[in-house]
Image (cartoon, rainbow, N blue to C red; front, side, top):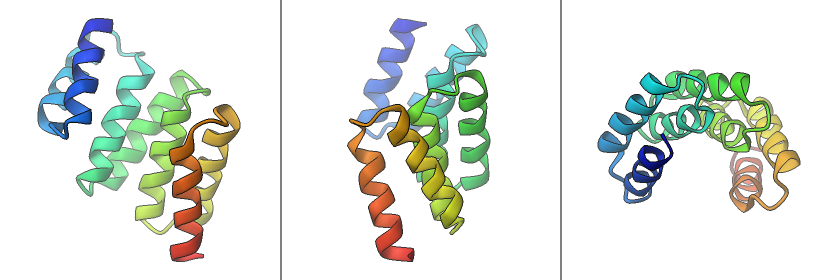
Length: 117
């Protein structure tokens, strides 16, 4: 699973979302409780405009591992895209609480407040 996840992350970081999704699905077929794969799928779905599906993936990630800051961050992004701003800010805050070094959560929180607040 670790090797598949590493390969999926490379694809994800190269914006090859289709192939990354294939690998995340393979990982989840082996280990349905692989929280990070669920949260990564959520980020891909957000980028594709499939916000409700993204929220569902991120919520699954958070249910499996409440300390998955990427799950909270991903859910925040999808909620912000749906203009559920208060909930989005809560998710960004939770991601920051879990990982105070996660600059993307600070940035997206500020961007959400600036753009919509």
